[in-house]
Length: 494
Image 1 (tube, one colour):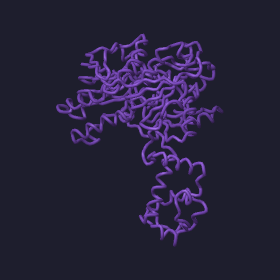
Image 2 (spheres, helix red, strand yellow):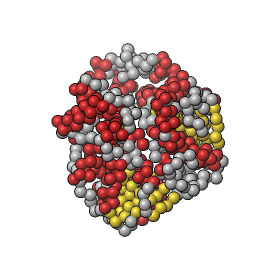
Image 3 (tube, helix red, strand yellow):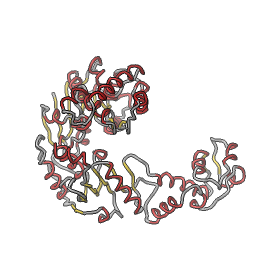
Image 4 (cartoon, helix red, strand yellow):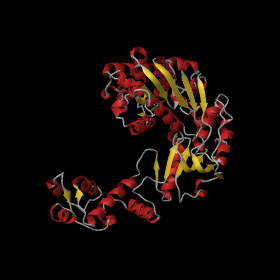
């Protein structure tokens, strides 16, 4: 028996799933439940809620995982067996090719980000259950790649992994499908199903065969990982009992109208009648971001690609805004934690050796580092002791004591503090690509509509992908949506 849950933006899909999970846990052993997601964070959320609600431990919930993590554990693999970013660099050196910008997404396991078109195509093909050569031939070399080079890199990648005894994330799935044995489940949950690739759908089908019931949740309108092989059609065509969550608790009326106008342009989708919350919300249009008042409130600033985020980051930096990129800690926040510890020292509060050592990294003439060799790494030290015995030469204000900080950084921190920003907390303003922010929300959103050349031509060729992407961007806003017009004709028209 299969139940399919469709969760439009802000309709409480996770909350619904947690309620379903609680019902199941009241009558089923936790070890007989599978809870599988596309992202680590979503898997951890499900696990944490189950642990808190039913006083369980992690050991009680062995199958609350991403699909990759599940296959990894079932196959008895170890971390050292897994292909890492440095292995691609080593392979590139062997081939005298520089593979640029290859990294795994540490939240969405198995998502490989690569600036190298050959590695990207190989990963995409395998996620689609195709050979790279077949995908190349099928698309008439629209990728602008060389057949012979693709064939060599594909074969050499296979050889490298075999020689080193390594597997990559897609290998995990393939090996489980070939010889892995699925546990017997009473119920399996699959969340974020619209983002699953064909090979992941094959995993789900194998798990369903060994489960009495499956509950599969997602929203095809928010399927934005096609570039990584995600197959929304598999979710759209799924058969079973269907439940559409109808009330959004995030999206206000005016923003809902914008979102609805976008998503109704998508040709192949599951029709969903859902309603916004009662608040009207606000939608504003601007030619430049400097017309948006960012001085107060929580903000997401979203763009289609990193190219446009760089320009946004430059604007924010030049105008002394406290902001962060996705999943990164701003340098000023790290420095501010040192300032707080320095102020504690000045107030007579002893610091642990490790905290003091970090402070000295921002000093040059104001400390004799050789004297620190005699310090115990386990002890706490006050200001007087540090000055008398361990080479500290100042007790001045931080902007004097930290003489290895540049004037620009000192000035920036002082301006941010004067503006009332709390540098001990995460910034009010977060910038990200739309792909990087799915699942997040903020009161206020700025949406940049410029498209790169590559994205623009993809938009012309297959507009549904861009419709879904900008639908996701628009529906991150809880109160106010600010749309920035594209600077050229190569933009997404909202």
